[in-house]
Length: 211
Image (cartoon, rainbow, N blue to C red; front, side):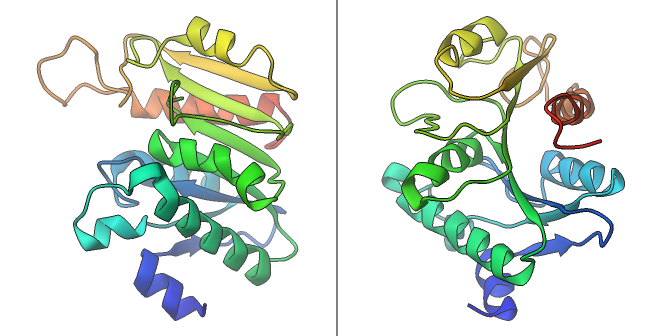
C-alpha cells in the first residue's frame, strides 16, 4: 500500500520528529475519528514532547457503518498502518495508543499479528467479553481510566491486570466517565481530556518510554 493509498483509505496523518526514535500510532474510539479533540490532543502533546505521531481512521467511519462484528476489520486496519509505519520509518520504535475500541484492538495486535510494540497505552480500558486482551505481550502498558468509567475504576482495572506479565501504570482521572466527561454533568461541556492527556504523558515517562 502506497502512502497515497493509506491516506485516502484510512485518513492517515503523520507528524515526524527527526530527533526522537519513538513513533506513536493512535487509534480512535467507536464514535469519533482522528479529528476528535481527544485524539488531536494526544497527538499534539506527544509531538510537542518530541515524539513522532501517526493517526488514522478505522475504515468503517468512511463507510458510515458501525464498527465491524468482532473488530476483525479494525484489527486489519491497524495492522496495515503498523506495517506501513514500520516500513516507512524503520529507525523508529513503534508505540500504540488506543481510545476505548482503539485500545481493545491495540491490545490484540501483538498476539494476533505477532508484533512487539515498544509500549501500549489505553485511554479507557474496556474489560469483559471482547475487551482488552494482551495475550503474551509483556511490554510497558499505561492505562488512563476515569474514576466513574462504566467498565471500572482504577481498582477494577488493577485487579484485571494483576496477572499481566510486564510493567503497567494505571492513572485515574477523578470524577470522569469513560469519555473523560464529568460523570454527573448534564451536558458534554465539562470534560477532563486535558487531565487525561497529562496523565498519559506522566505514565509514559514513569515506564521509561518518554523522557
